[in-house]
Image 1 (cartoon, rainbow, N blue to C red):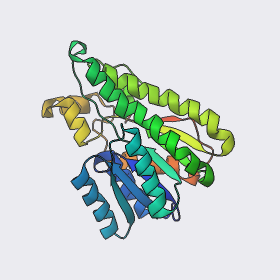
Image 2 (spheres, rainbow, N blue to C red):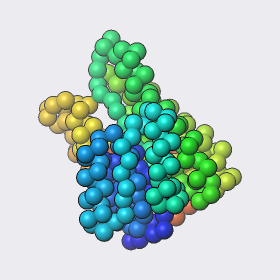
Image 3 (cartoon, rainbow, N blue to C red):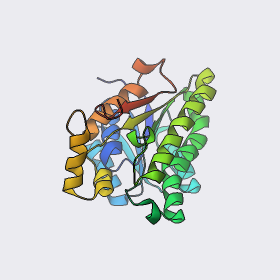
Length: 248
């Protein structure tokens, strides 16, 4: 399929994992893609791999928690490709820890990347999305839909992303700008491995899933592309679980 020919997409946290899978799929279906990530070498290599496969891609090294970096990333998108149609806020951090070990500094760091960065990107992308009548997709999480022990900051930030998404969808709907979010469950990525910390913990996640396994990044990307495509033209304000039934 070539659903995104002529479209320009910006994906944060795109060097690896779910973000990379989304960027690769968008490029394969015709979009020009800007990859934003703080992992300079990995991000540049991912953009290079997309170009080597025949796609159009540009990498920007960015700390999404810094407003000046977000402004620069969006400006680079428009400078390189001339417009912005699709914004995917995927960058995120987190990790399990006992509540007593959750310092105010770590709480603020998680909220800066997982929530404030979403607000910043939406704020500064909006003038361009108004011109293109574009779409926003925020990556929330299964963790934003249910309480999880030892994961208070991440759960709270991702729950806030869901309500931010729904509120913004109501405000921008009359302008033809759709705003949705995905809520992935356990996905086999470096972020999840950092969360769980051991092979045994990952096996326990498998056992708790009704489908008996983790998601693959490509499966989350498939749902993301549907939400960004014209097939979802009347879908906005939705928090779509893609979790193998974990929150059913």
